[in-house]
Image 1 (cartoon, protein in one colour):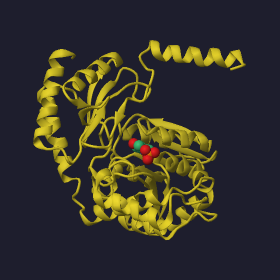
Image 2 (cartoon, helix red, strand yellow; image 1 turned 30 degrees about the vertical axis):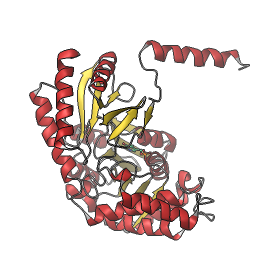
Image 3 (spheres, protein in one colour; image 1 turned 135 degrees about the vertical axis):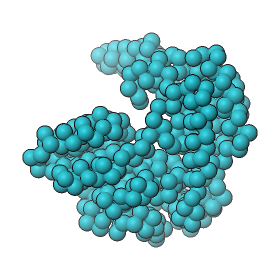
Length: 389
Ligand SMILES: *Cc1c(COP(=O)(O)O)cnc(C)c1O
């Protein structure tokens, strides 16, 4: 590097990260979506992936990917608006819209891109965006890019939101955006309460169903009976659906608008046929088996009961995402390492992914866990409690 200012800046930043225990590295994991992953070649029970339904290795998804590759090859060849389209992509969007009971849907290569696209297209300088404080980073980045006024409300605090909406009552356009299942806490948004506020204030309601899709059928909006009161549904294929990418489902007008204004859609090569083939297979599986999430949801209930009995703090979790609150980052890492020694792999989530002082283990359950696997987890956590906490 020839520019000393940069060298100092990068070097200092790395040093600070290392000194504060926040330096990130890719762990030496192989087979990271499987029930047993390999860490440095050693098999560990994988409670860190978002493959909640175990679909990533499902024969139907593999077959969907392979047959799409054989028919269309490895690449879509261009942006969808130029020549990157193929019939399977249209089919996927038709099925996705039917899954969500909306008029139309649009596919994106990643959930991150979908949120950046939605927020930067639907919000602008004349918009006030009301956002839950724990929303996913991609929503935050999308709002920043949009130039909208970003008003963040305390997590799940509808009276705080009501007051803020009152305060900004004269804004030209208003939009409320929330995760439905919060990714690091595993708790749920109150979509009915949000829809009521949106009605009262003439605001658009945008929901991110990344962690609910498949696990709760089409998503939490359907479970809570308010799907038709949500204006924009974002869902990912990359979590419960076991594949990759995302879709946005909405009325035809909003989807037409996104096709014309969503820059991550317009200026990016459309994802490859393999991904679309796998997604279509996943979507058909969960539509045919609407209660596919039943087992993993029940495992969540069971695990929370057991963990609370051990005196562990699982926060407000109500899903297969179960945080074990620890607080201090170093402690969280030590706890993760102790579990690893017992054959269980979970994520240690630290700031800035979660607020300062709320470092935690993040256990994410999956439908293919046996009762024996669950006992392995409980035994490891019992040991942890004695050793580290
Ligand atoms: C993972 C996640 C995303 C991003 O989706 P990817 O497909 O992984 O890019 C968006 N929103 C939420 C809430 C997520 O948890």
